[in-house]
Amino acid sequence: MSAFLDALRERLGEAGLLVDGDLAAFEADWRKRYVGRALAVARPASTEDVAAVMKLCHEHRVAVVPQGGNTGLVGASTPDDSGQQLVLSLSRMKRVREVDVSNASLTAEAGCVLADVQAAAAGAGLLFPLSLAAEGSCTLGGNLATNAGGTQVLRYGNARELCLGLEVVTATGDVWHGLSGLRKDNTGYDLRDLFIGSEGTLGVITAATMKLYPQPKDRLTALAACSSLDDAVALLSLARARAGDALTGFEVMNHSSLALVARELPQLAQPPGPAAWTVLLELSDAESAEHAHGVFEGLLETAVERGAVQDAVIAQNLAQARSFWHLRESIPLAQAQAGLNIKHDISLPVSGIPGFVAEMDAALAAYLPGVEVIDFGHLGDGNLHYNVQAPAGIDPKAFLSAHEGAINTLVYDAVQRRGGSISAEHGIGRLKREELAARKDPVALQLMRQIKKALDSQGLMNPNRLL
Image (cartoon, rainbow, N blue to C red; front, side):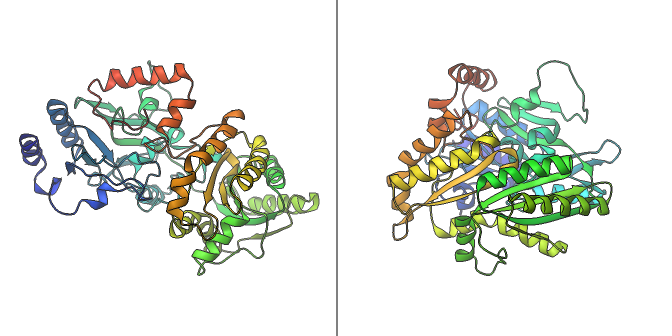
């Protein structure tokens, strides 16, 4: 390996290759479930650097683990413990190359932090709507590699829907220059969609052209208390009917989720009163602030009259609106502080979610009395984070070790019976690889493996992730 590392160092320079010293930040995932040992960390500064690295890896048959902000939740971007895998960090490639106001698009490099992409769009008077809790550290390339969703999928779609074009370095070091700003391009297979969501197993995304939107004239946020998940679904239907595309966010949080935040993060403001389910909903209107206020207040009043909502509070200013969102986005942090837990990132038809939750809550209570279900997520697009924590007094790590397999089987069997997905936005990585192999349609798996073989014949791109 010395010849390989010498060649990398010659190409990237001392700042571009980390071999000695503390590499821990690159070798462990955000949840600390996966801790590996890297051969080295390559930090290219350009697409040409990435191409050179991939050519050397192909020549020396060295496996590559692409890494963005390393904020993933399924172990897709950390090396194994062999000490033979090269971490390819895109963190130095963080330039916004262009903001095209007339085309309502932006081109940025893969290592650009999501919050910086949002800021570049805002600086041009436009909106880049992809938004998630890790936006201060996750990167655009990672968002695309996992097809990230976030809180505004209901209105704008996930990362795939927001992407117009990609620049990708292949497993052999060739560069696909696909940074098109076109909305229409019907010239064969859509290679863009092939690489989005592939978790670094087919190639390295080095830059992307993304859609931008007008900034809303007004943004209104509210918390609504519902006595049941059925009532929350009824509120969603009413909000869709009254607000249409102006409905940009619709999040649900069960009582246990907010109780956990209150326990672990007591400094955060809490909703006015406890409720079985709390809905966070947001409307954005690009035309008229007065119209938005009228629609928002009207739909909440109607929801209260119909019994779908017990009480509601509308944010009176931007600071209060941010505090509402901060409450929702702090649930994962509160869980991390409480200890290891069993995470599920599932999607179902919205109509089937109340029945699923009722069945699973009962099944888990019967399986392990006292188990705590932290249930929250993006009800508007059918995505729940149905997470399970240890009963009081049981060590979280021991709970995970003893019960993860059985609880996963209970949850994923129920999801599969209802035609849902075991991964809505987090991806597969290493965490769900065996579940995918057991549950995905066999023909789909065969096609995926054929694509992988065609684009990565040596199997060097993020091996043993996803497939």
